[in-house]
Every structure is written in structure tokens, then in C-alpha cells.
Amino acid sequence: MATVDPAALYEELTDQGRRRRRLDELLYAAAERVPGIAPTAAEMEAERALALADKRGVELAQGELAGRWLDEASTGAHLIDAMLAPLPESLERLEDFRRRGVAELGPVRVTRSGRAGLLELRNPRYLNAEDGHTLGPTEVGVDLILLDDEIEVGVIRGGIVEHPRYAGERVFGAGINLTHLYQGRIDFLFYLLRDLGYVNKLFRGLRIEGGGTVEKLWVAVVERYAIGGACQLLHVVDHVIAVRGARMHLPARREGIIPGASNLRLPRFVGDRAARQAILSGREWVAGEADAAALCDEVVEAEGVEQALADRIRALTDSGLVNAAANRAALRVGAEPEETFRRYMATYAREQARCHLSPALVRNLERHWHARQRV
Image 1: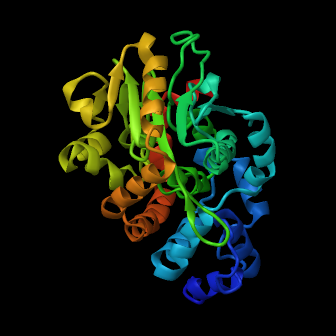
Image 2: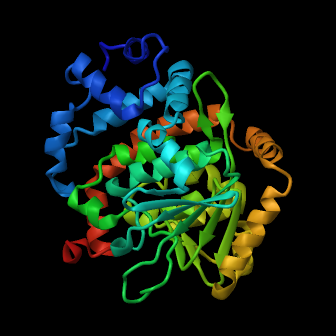
Image 3: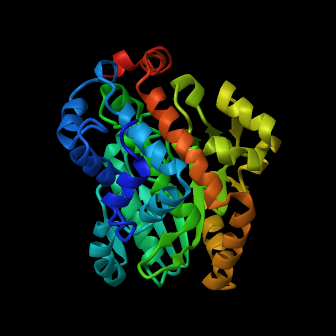
């Protein structure tokens, strides 16, 4: 890295900033352009065949290079902008979605109902956990809702799961798929593509060709629990409806990873001390209890979810999309400038790579998740 100027390399790979390229594409292009600076696609294919405990650590270079690009104001801003662009698959599916109002995306289903677009994560075997199988479809689903002119409000909800304890019920989300993580089936880049991709699109909207941003209001419906990455989503949506008794927490300390951008965002909701308790010591919140009010806008009984959701969509769309988008953009300026996010993600890229490849993560998964018995 010492003999390569990361900013100059970035400029070369993006045709002096005239070309938008996603982070994964850039990293593989960099590996071809400067051998050794990051793993090639072939090297990563071999790495995926290894369990987490057996990985060779080649992804550390991806974290370092991504961090160096994000460190620089110009390249970092350009990269964030590129990651906010619609995915090619989203554009390919858009006309069909506009016509039919439904998009079946494997583990994700998107439907339009009136002025609302519902994104339903359906990974029932793993309690709607997120993994490499769900990440791309989720981002396509977010893109479609943002791009469809008939939709004013997006809704995120977990699908019905198979687990005997919750059979026939909806679960908002169990965070990252720890079974796949332990098996080595989740790349380090999962974390960066997720937070620079669909999560940031929920928060900042889409950057469209020719300039400009398309953003909409988002509602999350928390049923049963929002763990880890699912809890992180509550920091970027505009309204949270939670079923009484639903649990919300960030078990990153027990897992040994950084909980996305929660270190940056959670203190805005619950205060610095409570955020530290959650991230460093595993504090939980339960919908309906007084201290959980900072994370939930409405707490309802299970049988009242559908009515509460319908009422909230109606209330949020009464004044029109332009007014709503303008207000959320104005709120964001003071809450989290893009420059602050860029600097956070530069640190996150490096530190999460170290966490992801740390022997401590493997030990934590075996100790707290009993990962050996689940494989």
C-alpha cells in the first residue's frame, strides 16, 4: 500500500470520477490493476470455501483499501454517491414492477398497495436473518420502492417463519445469519455493501443519473424481535410500529463485531450512556416498557398491527411526498452530515475487517451461539 496512492488509483479506476463503480467492483478492479493490493475474485472464491476459523485473512486488505478511499474527502464522497445509485437489476425490473405492483426476489417480496410499498424479508429457516443470499434482493427491493412514482411510503416487515417457537408468526429480523457466518459463507464485504448500500439508501435515498435524490418515508413493523442488523434499521426509518413485548437489542459484543453504524446513530435515540450499555454490555429494550419509547413510535397489541400500519400510512401520505422528503432531508442535515458518515465508515471498514477475521469471533460464536452444534 505504501507504494500506491489510493486516491490516484481510485481516480484511475473511475475515469477521473466520471464513472460510478460499486465498492466490490472497484476492489476487484484494483486487485487486477495492482497485484497484491487486494484479493482477486478468484482468490475470494477460494476463500469462501473455507470455514471462518480457517480463513487466511486476505479480506483484511479489502478493509484497508476501502478505508483509505473513504478517508479521502473526494474519493470517499464519490464512493458513497456511487453506492447510492440504483442497482442495474433494479432498473431492469422497474417497468415490470410498475406494471404488476409485485416483485418476487427470492428471499424478498415487494408489493405495492395503494401509496405504500411493502418490502418483506423471507428467510424463514433462519428467523429472517440476513446473509449473502438476502443482501442483493433486499437492496433491489429498496430501489424499486424508491423508484416507483406511485409509492410514497416504504414499509419493512419480516415474513412468517418456520421455527417451532414462532411457527406461523412474523419475525422482524434476527440480524446477521450466524450459522452462515461461522461456516465462512458471509464475506467481509457483506458489512460494507449493506451499510453503504441499502441501509444508507433507506436513510439518504437514491442518487439518480443527472443529479438529484429520490427519497421517501419508511415504516418498520417490529414483530417478536429486532436483533442486530434488524435493530440497526430502526435508526434509519421514520416510524417504528412495535408489537408489545418485542425485543430490540444489539448482541454485537457477544458476537465480537461492530453493529453497523449503530455506534454512530444509536446515541441520538437513547443517549450516549444507554448506547454504550447496549453495544458494550448487551442491554436490551422491550416494546411497551418506558425506556424503549426512544426506539418505538407506536406500541400495539399483535392483533392491532394491520390497523396501526394502515393508519400510519394514511397519516404519512396526507401531506404529500414532497413535503415529507423535504422534512426528513432537513432533519438529516443536523443529525448526520454525509461527511460524518464518511469518516465513520472509513474507521468501520478497517475495524470490522479485523473483527470479522479475529479468532475471538469464532470463539464467541462457539461459546454464545453453540455454532459447532448448528453446523
